[in-house]
Image (tube, rainbow over all chains, first blue to last red; front, side, top):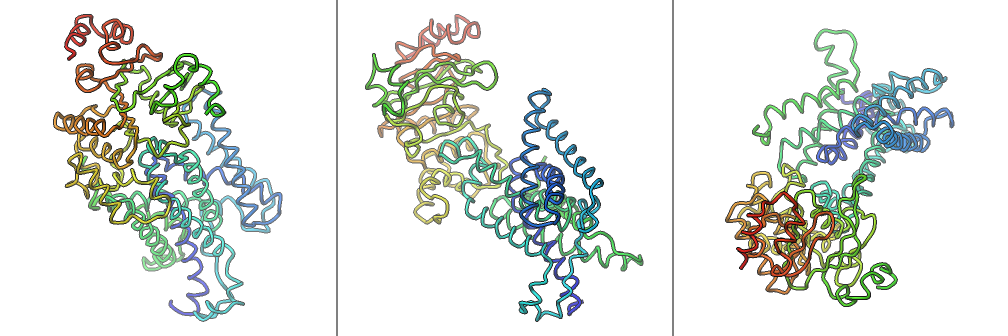
Length: 303
Length: 270
């Protein structure tokens, strides 16, 4: 498995899966601690119509049209949530639930009505992504990693998610202190002049950017799982936020690698014929890690 | 100052122009509303320098809201707070704040010393590394409240009183001139109450100003020299001897305090 074939067929999806998992898990740590974990879920739902509209307008799947479309959809849903909350006199949770399922449903309808046969964009893709098909045909072995011509033919999803991951890391590193303080004690943060509202918004925007970049390659199932499972499992391993971040990165990586391998080879080992969805398996593995952490981790709650 | 606060000067100008510019905290015309009803309405407060002032009033009277509005944590509908004669935004380095203990999740993955270090965050900025001298200062603040030996504990493993002391240590680490404390004695054991009041008295001895939301009427006259009575509106303000009276308490608390209780409180005053 470790040869030219591995570099061409397995390395890109492994890297994309791992980068996507880490890019979502990092902001997920803060979202989970802020009890906003479902924002990740909401984001991955509401951005679908935005991405579809961006495709319909530009006729291709590019980074910027996708991000802009997703951002537009996110803004519309924030406005919708406010509107429903005020006019409908329902609480914020219900307004969000209604908005994000409606946006996703709208995206599905839009997808079915438009001709997306020229690109890989359909309902199934929105859910599971297309991790297995992100291969690097120009690769002729490990030495291709140093060959600029071959590198230029890497799947664009890999470049996109790699850049997003770097941006996510930069955001968290640069704003680490205010993020930590305002997540723990928002009132104190504000009293110190930290713009907590803006920072919370920036966190959600960062999470959304990670979700959109990951969404294209791995689908919304992984995105939702990675926002929540690795950070929640990591929280049970340690009592320090710094260590929690590292644990979440480790769990995200483990989920991506183990999930990809199990999806590709697991069924064969069990005597089956076909491989199963890598995205589905990665999300499943992350859930199993969380379950194991909940049962055996050192810092479970006593109650 | 006139540019920044025209309405404040116009309102306060006639009687006490100096009060605003010299007071550690001068609140003028502060109104805050969460829904349709105002939580606090047109509040004026002038803290005396180097003194301890208790903000008292019944539940829901807007005591915490007043502090939060003074700190810019909630946005007022109208009014403003001046700190040592300048707008709040320029004076944040001179204010320390201790929120209510119940306002945060103590399950948060962090340690006692980390919380104390949060008090130094204005000084540390975004990326300056935490050096030994910063840790030493945080530890010294923890020591003042008797929590130095718990420095490496996760905060959820502490008792309520210990958590309250850690919050006070964080406020001390801010090394400010004005301390705004929200219910510093709420739900604490006797030893913690003693430790906290000792620290507050030290602060006063150093010339710092303390303004605290306080819920225990029986200790007002023992701990504080000034009171500010509030029930959405300002009821009274001044030295305990003149403002902490039966009439004012009756007005602030309405039927919630029995006449006998009030008499006891006011008579029991030193």
